[in-house]
Image (cartoon, rainbow, N blue to C red; front, side, top):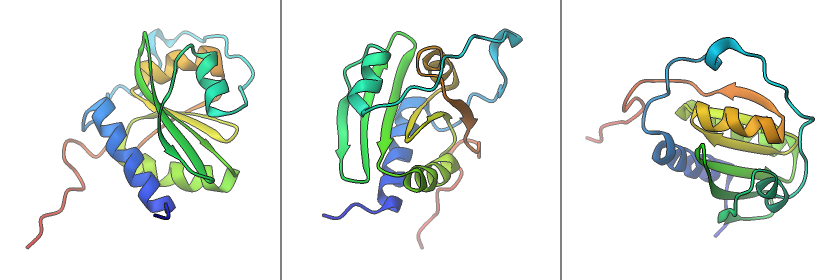
Length: 145
């Protein structure tokens, strides 16, 4: 079976909804407004990045274009994905962000989860925080008829 970017983004969206619930946190800001010290953005394989945050990834997708696993740390569960190309990462991220959630974005990798979890990961992995689009509960579900 050939994995397409659309299928991968849809799979990430389903996993994201399972991790964070249907809606976003809604606060959109940083907690307490404190500026934390952010390290240089980490690089490496999915396993290298997981080791940085002390988790053992449960690999869900192992393809040439993307590797994706679920990790659990004290702050919560998250999806960690690594990409073969910058373009593949951006296309995946653009599709996945339609489903809400919080994203920690690095060089050819993304960590996806709730805001608290990805913010805590930033202290070890560096990266840039991005927010998905919040559509409210059950938005985007279509009725067949």
